Image (cartoon, rainbow, N blue to C red; front, side, top):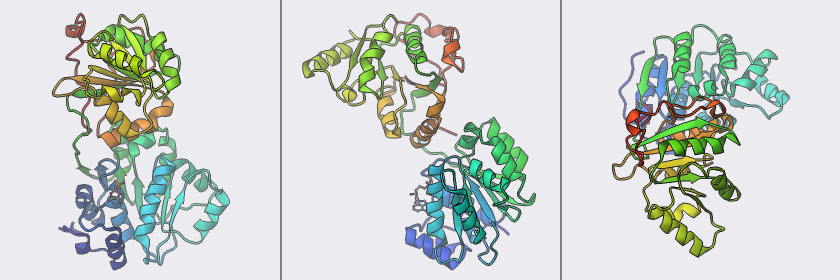
Amino acid sequence: MDTVEWTRFEELPIPEALKANLARLGFQEPTPIQSATISKVLAGKDVIGQSQTGSGKTAAYLVPVIARLDAANPAVQAIVLTPTRELCVQVAEVAHDLIQDTGLRVMAIFGGFSLDIQSAALRQGVQLVLGTPGRVKDLMMRDRLDLSHVRNFILDEADEMLDMGFLNDITYIANRTPKVRQNILFSATVAPGVKQLINEYMNYPDHIEIKQATRTADTLSHHFINANGPEKDSTIRKLLSTLKPGAALIFSNKKQAVSRIASAIRGCGLTIDYLHGGREQDERMRIMRNFREGRIGALVCTDVASRGLDVLSVELVVNYDLPREPDVYIHRVGRTGRIGEKGMAISLVSHHDMAILRRIESHARIQLTPYPGFPASASSNTGFSKRPSDEKNSRRYKGHRRQSGPRR
Ligand code: AMP
């Protein structure tokens, strides 16, 4: 089948019920990723879609996949794997909306639900299965899920699935679907692991990449350092004593931790103070004035306390903890890299933070890269020997190498 030219969903060669469901959802014109993907998938091509959550990627693969499902056949014909239950539920909601009045059945499979209930529902006949790799594999190993009639194999957020260690489960599942099938892979990044998946399982895929503008300053670079609990204090001390920023903000999620962190990082060569909502108003005013006038080099603070610092531009923002909300990250790092100045944001992360890190990357349309010079684990860190030499002796740290930027 050749790809079709189209500008509105109603022009697509898809079932009328699906068009009506799209209209009910208010989807009339496609988003860029949908416009580029849907006719290729309808034409039977393997597709790699590189775009973020929020771009309309779910419908980009669900619409053409659902359009080709056969309601008269009770076998599972398409499977979508997602890294988390949250994404699985989100995709399932869109799928449910899209299959109204089509006679098709959809099922979401993820841990935490009774295997028996899920198996019973599968026996009724389900054409589209959405699931997390672990639970899907589990049901397959118990012979309760048969994927031998699958025609569409879809990996959503493939990079995240690999980061979460699902490679073996994905391999197990893929190897038990027919060799001749159509593959669709969505991923925000195409790192080497994802490339390997593509090489192994996809058949001359078309690569569609939708670039979005970042939501943070272009002059700002974003990094992360792996550090857990007690390692965080020593990591920050080393960072500050090496970078010697003119002004740095260190954000903590917890008000109770702020003064402890400030004490723990003293001795890094900068004057340290801390700010949280519990400090007296006149004390807060004095600290802000001192920070503004350069008498405090690094200020440890909470998000609430930092509001009064909105107008300040700093050279370095450190996230002692990653905020739970992506918008808070954008707000925090907005203090640096202002008006064309270079700035840097460094986040200390543990392996528990990977999901929120990805959400921040996706939402802010940025990529956090490992901070150069740090080993993977801060516990074995011996210093910053790899700093560019031109920065070495500067009191005010400027001109670090840009390591990251908008996601490609
Ligand atoms: P997604 O990236 O799939 O999570 O979609 C992001 C949001 O865009 C969801 O709230 C969708 O309901 C909405 N959306 C997706 N496609 C369209 C479209 N063609 N027109 C209007 N809204 C859309």
